[in-house]
Amino acid sequence: MEVPFISIFSHFHFHTFLIMTYSADIKKLPRHFLPADFIITNWESLEPSFKNLEEREINSLTELEKWMKDASELESVINEDVCWRQIKMTCDTENKELEKSFTYFMMEIQPKVQPFSDRLNKKLINSPFVRQLDEKKYFTLLRNVKKNIDLFREENIPINAELNVMQQQFGVIAGKMMVQVNGQEYTLQQAAKFLEDPDRPLREEVYRKINERRLQDKEEVNTLFSTLLEKRHRVALNTGFANFRDFRFAELGRFDYDKEACFQFHEAVKLHVMPLVNQLYEAKKKKLRLETLRPWDVDAEPAGIQPLRPFKTGDELTEKTIACFDKLRPFFGDCIRKMKEMGHLDLESRKGKAPGGYNCPLAESGAPFIFMNAAGTLDDVTTMVHEGGHAVHSFLAHELELFGFKEYPTEIAEVASMAMELFSMDNWDVFFENKEELKRAKEQQLERIITIFPWIATIDKFQHWVYENPNHTSEERGQQWLNILDEFSSPVIDFSGLEEYRLYGWQRQLHLFEVPFYYIEYGIAQLGAIGLWRQYKQNPDMAINNYIDSLSKGGTLTLPQLFESAGLKFDFSPSHIRELMNFVENELVKNLQYY
Image (cartoon, rainbow, N blue to C red):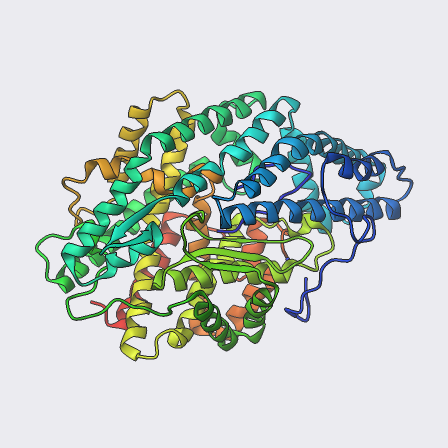
């Protein structure tokens, strides 16, 4: 997941670029407006800079562009400060001082920033010199500024402040979840590796323990979500929208597709992906020689075949990822090297650490921060190269002139990460020296590309229902979740007797709590990533050059234009999805002799 840049010119929700030389020797942006040693301590330390921008006279195009650069610098400094507060808190959710630091910013500083930000937005748009700006260069930036003006409401400031703090409570709750396996304590992420074990009774035991542990906190999580839902709905109503879904689409800047396109995606997954998913699970059942395929079997290997264990420590994962990226393009490997050198990696799972994984861009430093919960599995390799793709995106965007130019759409951000998963596969021999293991790893990755689509559709469709029906009860929410889950569940898997686990299955999805409606992006981006991989199979250099070219443009182009610059169609129609699924299926058959 990419943690979006935080803009002082937008509604703040804390959550899911042009360098010709492509050097990873990234430099911290020099300050020209703020003192080099300035550190944010409280609102009083920031206020003079905002007043300077608000009161400054702008009498020419040159002065306007200088004003925009100074505002961009201030945004970058604030962005990096709050990002570090969030990073430190998610790395150690049990440290109350770190939580207090994050909460202080959200409750005491951010609410005072927002009114100034709105006035600065209006100052920019109302300047007579704004019409003299290069229309092509500034189109997307000015479009976002106008959108933020349209959405700003004073009465939403305290609600947003509460939401920013409350959303992080999911990580605090989940970070405490532990289970015992064979007398040893594990985080849920660490315990999940046992679901790959050839020992079927052990797999079932661990599957049940993980789900039982989640159920212990089901009421607390349910209450948290209900409170978030109520506050989000109030924000939407205050802004003149019928529901939070419609507000959020506007806030996320979804200028290029609407809810109907999402519904079309859901149906296309049913039509053109689910049959392939069913084939994969039938093949898995046959491979494991089982009468019935249960959910604790889907990641398993037959007896006698040990699970893939590509690394043991976070350091080993880092070094192997660097070696993998070096083979693809040395610049890619250098990006991870630089992050390691700067201490911008926290990879291993441990008690008290928030769940999930993310790449957090750091606007001033340039080199982002990768956070994840590695436990030594193939999924961790996928996560690392995924977040590594996000990191490359951050490096490529760093030297763009303005902060606003770096605010790229989340859909293209996920193309950056998902395409890197596919590009890197041919170099996974650094993780798997044994050719048979390498083949298994590629096979599992291609299976994952296919099987992720139903889950994306499930989470997205669930969110549409939740926010279209904000007054629903917890019981109605659970029933609707089950209805949607059944639409996208394979009949090949037997879920009998697991009804309560399924009823609360939505509670494990971090995005629902921290970054609402950030999920369809994965589906759109996976289609783009498959398209780039298809290019790569024909001409690797061309595909990587297209990838770099698109990512280096940051947010200076519209989403369809960014896809086009990567040689892709911005298209998630049923026919296009069918075409790409056929390509992935053919790769499975051709290269892996899967069937």
